[in-house]
Amino acid sequence: MHIAVLEDDPDQRDLIELLLSSGSHTSQAFGLTANFVEGAKRERFDLLLIDWMLPDGTGAEVLRWVRENLGWDVPVVVATARDDEDTVVAALKLGADDYLVKPLKGMELLARLDNVARRVKPGGLPVLRLGCYEVDVQRHRLAIDGDAVTLTQKEFDLSVYLFQNPGKLLSRDHLLNKIWGINAEVDTRTVDTHISRLRKKLMLDGSKGWKLTPIYGYGYRFDRVDSAA
Image 1 (cartoon, rainbow, N blue to C red):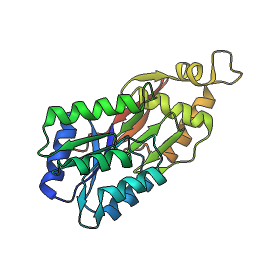
Image 2: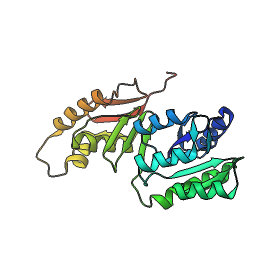
Image 3: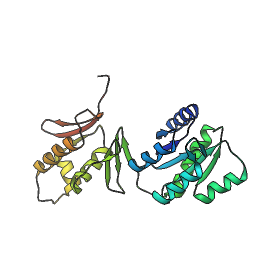
Image 4: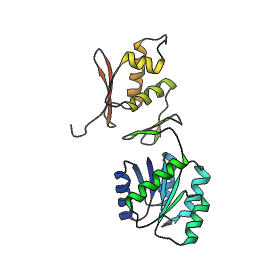
């Protein structure tokens, strides 16, 4: 999952990001409510993990904003040192899906987050993430660094297939059959045309960490670029 973390304490932010990374999650951390709100407007997150007491607001205010502006589909988990019943009840009534008391325990945190995600979005299509690229199949959205890219239907379908098969040799015939269908009245030049467009639109020249490489006489391969190379 890609998780937004709202936590004003730098040490706690670092710890939470480390714990999330150990569970194969990606995260974007914010220290201020205002920055969190701007980030949530710009980027799609699978789950929000928020503190309750913040320097420029409260968890209650954040929860109200989330439910009013992002709806009820995105799960929200509160993580705070406050363990009094009034605060727990207030958070749950305002729309929190779970409540964790600090100090956080790594295994419990990951298990709770996974449980909330399963409960809130059972069977939902996964969001594909490779570096700065995010492909939301269900919402038909592909973004680079949070910015959506305008694609035709076939361009999007081809992008999804490439992102699902990094590092694999994909022949032109194979891509043609997968994206356009076996009986499509087009030839492999159509694949080349769409690949050329995607390379430009998605900056698949290695500058963003991924490269779409032509394999002479065969097809293409979508690979991660080794920055140390």
